[in-house]
Structures are given as C-alpha cells and as structure tokens.
Length: 287
Image (cartoon, rainbow, N blue to C red):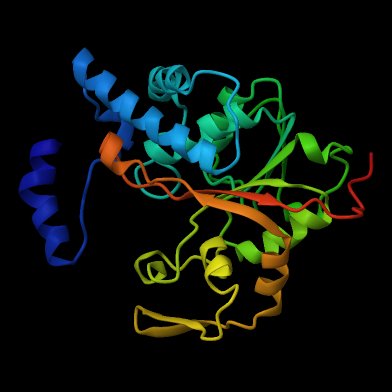
C-alpha cells in the first residue's frame, strides 16, 4: 500500500493540488534515544514553566515530571487524528495547564473526536467534565463519567455553584469575546482558549471566529480596525465592536503560550490562558 501511495496516489493528488499523507498522529513520530528524549522533555518543560508563570499559575508539582508522564501517556491515546484537533503540543499544553490549575469542574466547548476530553481526564482524574458540541457523531473517545450535550455551553445549567473550582476550555470556533462575556456572567475567572490567532497572523489560519483574545487585547486602545484577506474574501474586525469592548473590560490577564515547536519539533499549538476579573455579582448556576 505504501508503494502504491508513493508511486501513484501522491503524484495524482499533487497534480490536483493536495497532499496525501498517512493518517497517523504526529506523536507516532518521536525520538527514541534517551539523550534526545530528555532534551525534548526538558526543553518543553522549561517553556511550559515560563508560560505558567506568565499566566499567574503556580504549579504544585514538578512540570518536568508532568511532561514525562504525558510523553508516556500519549501513545495510548484512543483518538488518532492527523488533520484537525490538537496535536502533541496542544495536548501537552492543555494537560500541564490543567495539572497546575487542579479544577474540580472542567467545561469543554468543542469536542471534535474526543482527544482533548481524554487529555482532560488524564490531567484531572477526579474532575467533573462537561462536554458540549453541536455534533457528537464523530467521537472516537467518550468519557464514561463525563456529561455530553449538543446545546451550547451557555444554555447549560446545573453544574453547581463552584466557579472558583471551574476551568472552561474553548475550542469551538465561536468568537472568543463572546465566550469571555458568557464566562464572566457565570462567575468564572479561569479560561483556556485554543486557536487564539493574532490580527497580523489570522490570515494564515483556517478562518477562526473573531474577535480572538489577541485581537481583543490589540484593540484596547486602537481606533483602526483589523482587516485581512483570505481565499479572495475581505474580513474586518471593527475597533469599536461593543462585544470586544465588553470582553476587554472583563479580562484581567492573558498569556499566549509558546507554540513549543522549537522545543519538540511538533506542529505549533495556540493555547492562551485568560484570567477574568471576578464580577461584583454573578448569577452563577442553579444547584
């Protein structure tokens, strides 16, 4: 089959403008000599330690040990995706961030095939996990103890009154400003976002919803909109967008994690930690 792929299928797809690659996750390719593995893990851990500090997150354990644990865990992941979803770097970042945050409740908006749900469970074995996605038909991993729903997370209720012990992870291609405003209205203060594209780089991404966290921050004191072009279409993020302004007022701190590519060689990740101001009064969730 590999000979057929190289001799016939690859040239055919190349003429059509497509790349044909084996459907293997990026972590199936890895160094095996102890010295190189140690260098990869140490470099990744050092980067993650800097990111946690910049995010205002104080880990209660050894980040290097967490990174090694993840390295040993990821080959057993039940989801093996090549395109879309998280790769090694994004999954590692999420795992370490959650190990450091130690939430009792995790809300996941955007499940896709279920890899990040599995990562959440490995990082937080005792947490209550609530997964939301409009289409759950493509799941390759379903957590037996998690709750699943196709309604938007903002329509859900009944998670209990523990906003301080809750972390929300958004990978759902919904404007991140909207998610910030929704989260603060529910009393949450710790959020994690995937696909936080900066305004000067958003043209290179697959059309993420906007405004992103980076764009919210860039527009705080700006009067000029952010404009870009992708696939022949013109896009604009207004500087005076009321939703972006409301999100900016809610945000106390943001930090975009390093993409880890230089440390690991794997595809860059885009995880951003967001800390919100605690609202003076929150309606919370019904018990």
